[in-house]
Image (tube, rainbow, N blue to C red; front, top):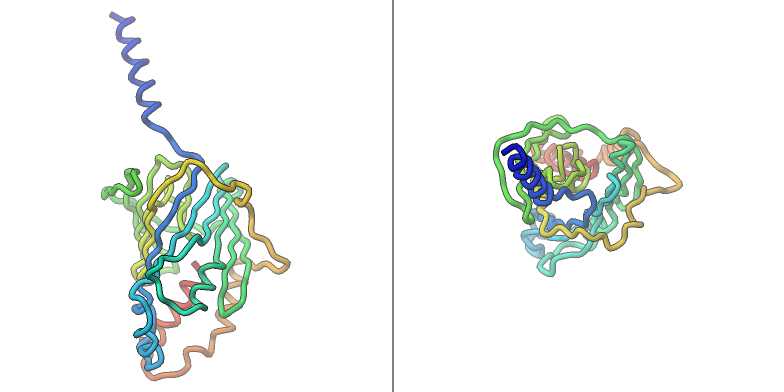
Length: 253
């Protein structure tokens, strides 16, 4: 009887182990949607521009990871996206590299028409886990609520079947990979559409470097100084504050 029990136990754990396939390297495609018009101001110039824009800015990005290191970068535009070239240029340049072994990151950001490379330690995010679940790209995901920039709430769905604690752009820190992310105050969502267990170009997963590099604090101080006079015009103080926040949040993500 003991022998039978032992055989059943071994078979059960063998089956469980084979079914529980943890992913430690992969290439994930994300569909990213932003409501461009809601992010714009209500001044006459922007109102005129809105007539020629698509409701959504839709693009596809690639998150590649291996050896607990990751790279998130632009892949392609949706054919339905109609936005100015300068907005496309900015997204096509931006990329994020994370090394979760050393807890360091580097990113390339195009802001105010110039490229900046930021290199720093990984900033912690305050998370609260919930009991809500959802399937994304074939993976069971659990919902978590996070807070960035002191008062901006974000909503993420992560899976612990993918072992890296990463996510799109600079969002990370959950006990598994983030496959769904919403930032309501930026009218933006990131949803994984497929997970490929083969990485097409693993040598690309490397730190982003430049002759001049900035810490997060140096970059934040520089951009705030460069744009300090941008929101001095107009009488609607609430609208000016909203425009400023949207710009800076996008710059510092």
